[in-house]
Image (cartoon, rainbow, N blue to C red; front, side):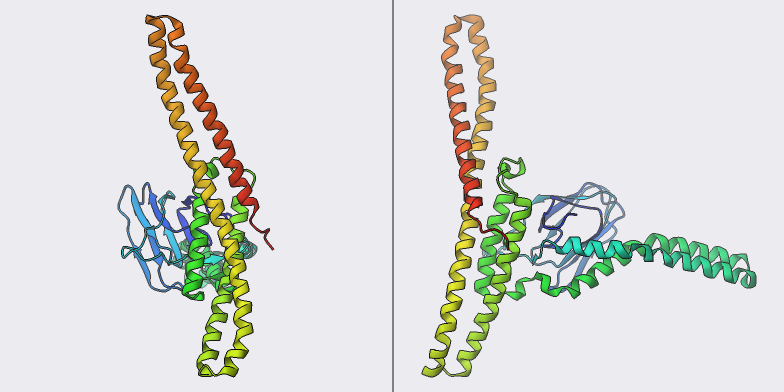
Length: 357
């Protein structure tokens, strides 16, 4: 799976990190017979929740925004059919983890570089069998041969997943979880992710009509850079609160903290402008979607109207059918012009985003 850009599907076998490899949401597998899945619901991959064996036929799974990873072993693949559910109590959804878009490719490169070492395990087992067979007999060789087959089948996938997890843990500075933000930071990150999801899931984006902006590359990079700033702001706010509490709000302490608060306020204003630019882009994409749906609806009506016009033309003079066709054509042309204008405005809003550093 490519780094920095989510697909709407998950391969049937592997371990995938939520917010790095896959987006949260509801997924469906057409046939999970005999397979299994595990959701690692804890912030660091603890608290696993799973199901095994899966029954024949379709099965569905809800990957929450707070999940750390999703492990699967099915014969087909998972397809996302719905976004994550909103909390039942009406509270804002917890933001999902955010990672450096280059992290997955880096992890895959490390694993691929060491992949040949994984096949040494079954070869080692066979070597022991050959060495021990003169002393222990052919049954020893047969038994170790069977063990070598099992190791060959099981070692690669398990070892690759474990190695990815270890390498990910060593790169803790390359991804952020909701626990890295305070309430203000989580709220702002939620706005960022809502805007990005709106653009990514829009029809005009899926059909490539927003071709002025490479959303698959730009949006993950924007999310990661904003998240890094929000995490640093959250940390500094916590430090300011500790300093203020330790000084019991004496005038000297207030005077010393004032410049720090001003600088933090400038940073907050700057990142807020960046978030608002993302939200404008999302709003323009939604607006273009409305026109696109209206255009398609009109095309459907026009197709049906032609059948009626043909009926009229067959029964009365042809000139009675012409005005209706011309009206539909004018309406369609107007919608096309409007759609182009909305797409241009969306592309303009996308161009307002600051370039990735």
